[in-house]
Image (cartoon, rainbow, N blue to C red):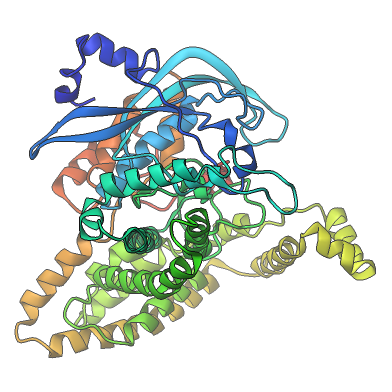
Amino acid sequence: MPHQLVAKFPGGEQECNCICSGGAFLLSPVILLCGFPLWEDADRGESRCATFRLLFLCCSRGHRSCCLDSLNPSVCSRCRQADGRKVLRSSIREFLCSEAMFHLGIPTTRAGTCVTSDSKVVRDVFYDGNPKNERCTVVLRIASTFIRFGSFEIFKPPDEYTGRKGPSVNRNDIRIQMLDYVIGTFYPEIQEAHSDNTIERNAAFFKEITKRTARLVAEWQCVGFCHGVLNTDNMSIVGLTIDYGPFGFMDRYDPEHVCNGSDNTGRYAYNKQPEICKWNLGKLAEALVPELPLEISQLILEEEYDAEFEKHYLQKMRKKLGLIQLELEEDSKLVSELLETMHLTAGDFTNIFYLLSSFSADIDPSKYEDFLEELTSQCASVEELKVVFKPQMDPRQLSMMLMLAQSNPQLFALIGTKANINKELERIEQFSKLQQLTADDLLSRNKRHWKEWLEKYKVRLQKEIESIGNADAWNNERVKVMNSNNPKYILRNYIAQNAIEAAENGDFSEVRNVLKLLEHPFQEEGATATAAVCSQETRSRQSYCSKPPLWASELCVT
């Protein structure tokens, strides 16, 4: 907790510690959540948190307000039949990722404190019937507001199929009050510009949150971040990354990567994040009727979202590739082909991008082979691929499902497992091919794929050089831009897991080490020094910027 914040508590540090641990509150209005797919349980509240507004957070520009959100302090009657308490494992992940995202330059809530206790609760971590005792823990989060898209869905009318409705249905007065508060407090420039026309004001607000959300998910895609649970109640009304649960940064690039072990249908897969965020905005639009007519909000959504996402995504990708001089139509294809090459070679998303700053249009032939070796070393080995494509279904179960698909396709369709069966068949096919693949064959194939793309990249870099006079100055600036947009250190699952296991054994030094490292994610002297200290202290553990160890592929986050 910042010292200037501690000093503002009447009881000083002791009261600060008590509040941050969930032992006391200044004020504790519970956030009422009503987001899809849980809006029928709207009266459950935010089962893990209480939020209180502080009007005394100091900053260099004077005083400003913020919200502190204490995750865990109270038990809610409707927390999916659980007790509403957060545990050490998930708290460390949320604490570290909040700060990691901030230092990556991505809009996010911040982590204030993480306080654990001797109290224990039973958790079935993988929902497999093997529960264990875990320490209750409180995370204090900081943001301008914790209002979400789902906050506006408490006014939902009865569902035509289930008859369920929001707890504040027909309370237009509350919706108007909440919308006025959100716009007036967090979008004051919009309030000022449209104070005499409510519909125009609301439309301008919806346009702005649409663009903020599009830019946010574009940032996620560019660092390989998967949120894991993009329900409407996990979408911030001010465009922040919020609620870090079963998130994950991709290691091996896979456009269909699913970080949430409970997401069996892949609804929140990496490549579906832009689509699902747009869908969530559509749900927000529905919730704002009649204060904003649906025909207006839908038009805004269709006109603004995709265009803003593509614009921001390509701008960021150009920086990651060091394309700083020209903006060419062919750049989008170059990015797509890079990602396809990563996919074909099972390349490490973060490390491949990081290495590209070492490549230049006039690279020496002898250094080219060394670069290619280093690049392909960031691709999955045969052993790693065997783990990735190992069949997951019992052969007898698969056989029964295939028989059902043939004998009763209608019932098979109702079960909704067609996509899972197809993926399993793909895994079996790939796994079979891998049995005959040697390490030399894989290396040769990967080098061929990367040579093809590097030639295209080389041609594109040459166009940059031809458009300027000083190639050396351009290359220095290019490398600088790339190194400030391609992180060397991200919060990989295995890094978080190592820190969690140490903390569960009473050693919190690894959490602190990782936090220091994540504060310098790009190529900086501070990050290098911190990494050296971390590596020395953890000795046998994998380097923080290397591909994950083989055992990490078995990690499952739910």
